[in-house]
Image 1 (cartoon, rainbow, N blue to C red):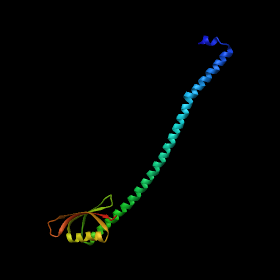
Image 2 (cartoon, helix red, strand yellow):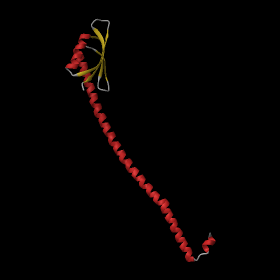
Image 3 (cartoon, rainbow, N blue to C red):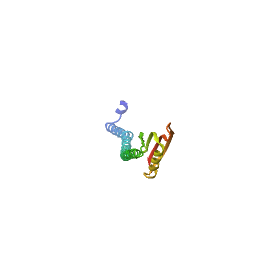
Image 4 (cartoon, rainbow, N blue to C red):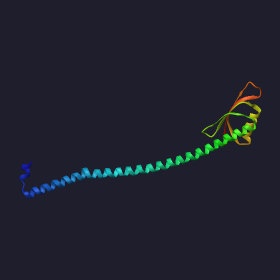
Length: 159
């Protein structure tokens, strides 16, 4: 290769070197610099799209948390008020609640052992007609004493 290069005059050798550097610079630009620039632009566009998606997800998460907090406080206080109201009205009818269990859907399950059937039915009637509550489930079972029953019922606020 050296012999081939030396056979040219100094002026031709300089011209060959300048052209070789120009070709190498062109090839570097076409095959290295331009693809790297395009890759950088693609990464920048993906980064921007990801940042926008993250902002939307953060906004949705904040909205979901706010909705859960508002629903949780509403249903929690409503369930607590409903439980207290049921317990108080049952005691007016001389009914002793043996178990009172609020549920996450806003209803309350009550259990009565050896309750007077007549008083229980009057109380249920009052719940539905006067207080506007909804009896979702009522289960009565006979006890050994006449006129008394064991009862389980689920009460919810009317929608």
